[in-house]
Length: 127
Figure 1 (cartoon, one colour):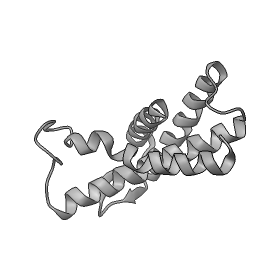
Figure 2 (cartoon, rainbow, N blue to C red; figure 1 turned 180 degrees about the horizontal axis):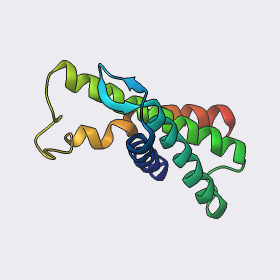
Figure 3 (cartoon, one colour; figure 1 turned 30 degrees about the vertical axis):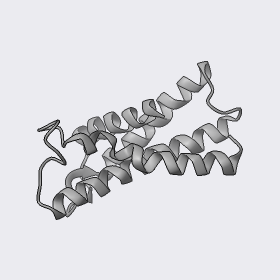
Figure 4 (tube, rainbow, N blue to C red; figure 1 turned 90 degrees about the horizontal axis):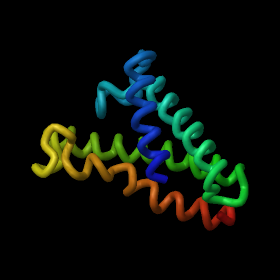
């Protein structure tokens, strides 16, 4: 799960910088693009499937791919929600512990959305 989240963040950043043109949600996070979000999802799928070849998290590749999609999309939603909170309260960082990096909440915003959804997917798909 952590690898998929990190791959999503990395892929979104790299693809967004290289190919990003269409803003995802400019009023919430002006630098995020649809191309970046798509690149993040693709890199999460690649990293997750390669990882699953060595240590499969689920018995079925289908369940693994569904879980990776949920992780990537939910992680990006968590990041957008946290950005919306910061924009609403007009703050750059969500705390003082990691100034310049968005604060501690910025490091965990994806996990707050991913954990419950991944549990639900695992229960429904029998993971």
